[in-house]
Length: 325
Image (cartoon, rainbow, N blue to C red; front, top):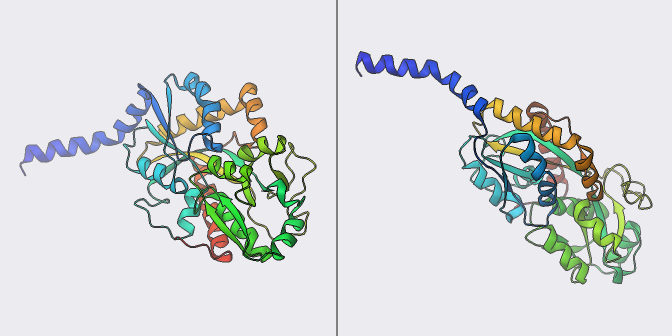
């Protein structure tokens, strides 16, 4: 290596710290793609569509929604993990990112190292629901019904490792019922089968569960969180119905970028999302989904949230003996 080459490399090394801030100051200069790790019509897809136009106004660029559902969010996560860390390809996913890892699924990415947490959008509570043909009206009646028919009931989930899978498995283990998981490619497909009566019960996120509950297509048996949903004040929590230590409450839904995403860009995105969530028109559109908006999340607080969430779901995976298949 010549002295000239060494000097050139040294100059580049000195310039490197200044490149990222400069790039962040000019960002964004073209459309931003949000990869939704779930299919169209899913809870996260609905959230993205609600925020899409408002984010465009905040960031000054079009927001492209790219649904890459399947494998409990793994397909979308894998795509973003391999994307350039320039702020133009983001991942919108949920606690399933941690759940898939907690059950020992082998992926081409490391959930703790392949992403930069940007901002938590909201928490999603879940609802235990059943087909009306069962004739049950609460969790205890479902438990009694299932115990009288060991191995005869089927429950729908949005895929192996999805939040609905983890929550329902925990419910099954805590109550000792014998039922069979029927995994689908996402919550919309699982709900269609639930409404049709081809599965007996399920745990649905509030975004997917509330509309068919209002229409009387399914029956709400209990809320999994620590409090009743404001949209369903007459539906008690599972804890109120005697199911103690039911840790599977609400789960996070947030934006992440590929590893190496410059901090100023992450901060800019988080600020834009929080401004959008503060808008009355956006908050009003979120009300029917049952989601609990955050609005104060930062890359730092979201990182801490994800780390704590991983510990929780690892405990659930052990308690319910959830393993990758």
